[in-house]
Image 1: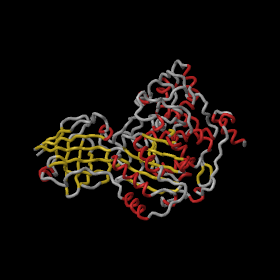
Image 2 (image 1 turned 90 degrees about the vertical axis):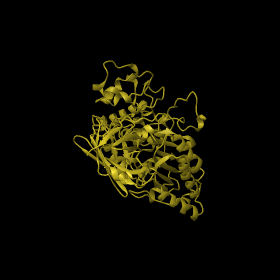
Image 3 (image 1 turned 135 degrees about the horizontal axis):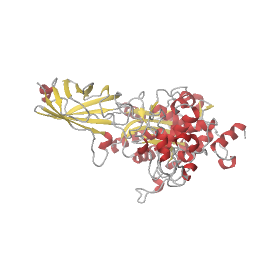
Image 4 (image 1 turned 180 degrees about the vertical axis):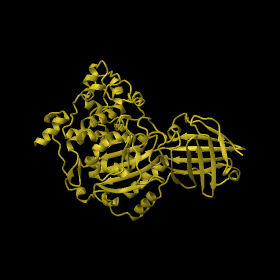
Length: 534
């Protein structure tokens, strides 16, 4: 064993016998020789042993299930065999990753371990002596970096909701009661991932996004990513990363290749083995909805990676942000979406894509390939259904409506219609918020309208007044009701804005897509009521 190998094993906190020896054997694959510095190589499905008909069946099943996907990219043997974006999403746009961010945070820890800056057996309290509670419990004193990585802190309740309203998240996390011995029980814990980010920043002097840039992002040719921060300037870790779909695919391919990229090691293979193998079992539900061996959330957890059925592993984030790595098939699937049924999405992968992958290349299938390509280039999310115009337009276009007092502080609204567009302008005491809406088409723009965009978690949110990119489409639902959909296309989410006109009055109601998924959909924003002026 080389001295560098011994050093890496030492920093993992294991003896050589306990960890075992991990090596990367590229075998006969030549992915590293053909992969470019930036874009991934492309190929046809059949050339890589994937059935175009199987890929097409997967896409059709997504439509039949009405899953809202935003992008996908499938790699086989290191080559992209299928890729698509549902309009108005596009390949060059970032997409919010939610908890898919956690796997990147784990990777930052892996680099820090490899460089000897920390060990997974280091005690968490050792990094933050000035933020400890007056009385340090035995469980807090025993808490290790490894327990953060495996979501086995021992908290009875997830500490994140208590953390994010505060200025010092580290101090709030350390003050949270640890009821169970660390390492003894799994409980999903985004606060634990934030602490990993804080620890890496403490030992490196850099935010993890900056620390990862020369080590991960630049070698893989990933650019333009962003990561939200806490009030003290620490990347939030457990969420908040925004990245392009191809960046997700490259990340998964790096893990599939045991840390090798373009023929050179980027991340130690030993870390990848440790991070992606079983470490702790998730609690089994008292009333499981399906057999445990078919539940992708009950296959065990590693270091911020989930084990999956079919000997796969993945990073995933709320609403269906996936990097799914399938070593047995030498395949990677990257998906972004807004779905309320993430298990259902994975079920479609197992049902349609697993059997579509064969050991060797397949005979060319020009007909299925042509259908697949046409399907991929025509992917689009549904615009609001309705008419493109209404007699009401003549009465309201160009008019200003004075709004009743409301929590958003908006004072007036106006509508300007033309053949294929509407301009909605909402004003408060200081700002004018204009939203250009295509009719029967998407119109791109941006908005800093109060209360936008929808978010699952408040922590790390950009300051009020930050503009967000949108694509907006609208239609008349009936003669007096104009509906607009605002898609925040660098996030999974959208708003539906319903404008109802009655004589000289307008009601403007909001419904965000997160709330719309709940059993009792309720948007916290007020219904705006306005009366026509003049």
